[in-house]
Length: 130
Image 1: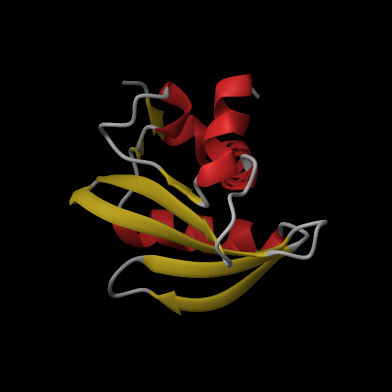
Image 2: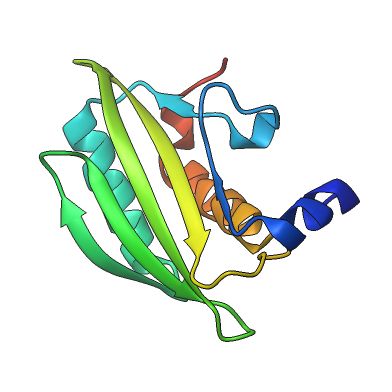
């Protein structure tokens, strides 16, 4: 992780992915899977990752809410969104925010990369390279 990311994390306590993200690691991921199949795979994968607790799932919207406790005792609230782009294509975005007013020192950034890494192992073969 770069020094710039840590310095940004001093004042910012959230991070998220989008199509317009400057950091290529924080770009939206696209998959050749239907929204329902993608959501099913994502949900089953997230439930197996140690240290993360699935709080709520809304299949009709395509959102899964997670919680993670950091080693410093802070709580991170994470939302994973699965969006249907077409009948056979979907996108995944992740938003992570720390509870509290101080920065996170890049913890949310690392959480997003960790979740995408776990998802790559499960559905990486369906990924669309952009």
